[in-house]
Length: 261
Image (cartoon, rainbow, N blue to C red; front, side, top):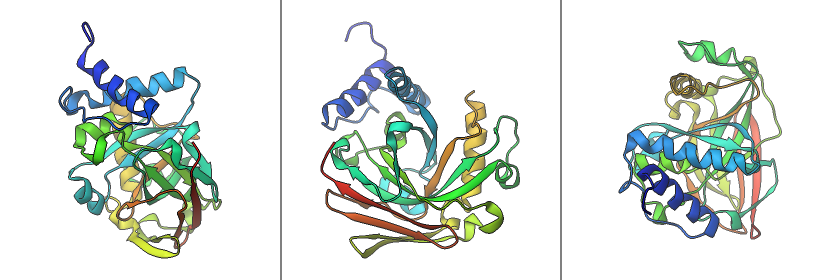
């Protein structure tokens, strides 16, 4: 690929994997952590140019259990696009995914911009319109989930799809760090956790994201959906699986996994 930068080569490798439905080699041979967000941004801008619309962000690697599973040691974030979103109870097409895993999260929908810091739990809470129960279906374009921090950031924080529950709860009526979660697959309990497992408080994760987004020149805006991070270990899923996550104070979110793309 004469004349292409390593960022372009890494972005192309990941884009080809997503397009062709064939997982690729890691990209850490091409870029380092300092270039990973540039790779992510290149592919996100290409998808937006093709007609997708950015609707928010996802925070990843907030749970010690998930960091241990994937061998990384710090949070990251990715971009949510409108074509990733599904409603509560929807059938999620596994044909669009390569190596799906599901995790349960507290989602925040912003009612105000977060453009001026410093940010803490109090200041970001004031910008939250409501919270919702959510499922994030994480996916990796990299074969066998053989990822480092660099790989997952470049791969849009291993984002796949997401499902928002129907319930919308004001923060006056729920304390995110005290939420308890149980995730079941086909009626079998597979993952549990509490809000405090997400960086001590999902609002702490939101404050971290707001700070990072401002530093990168792309602050969070009113209307954005923010998936604040998993409350428990991620669980592999496949076509035919039915997933339900129940959160104290927030409600329940469900999805079925189908075959079609």
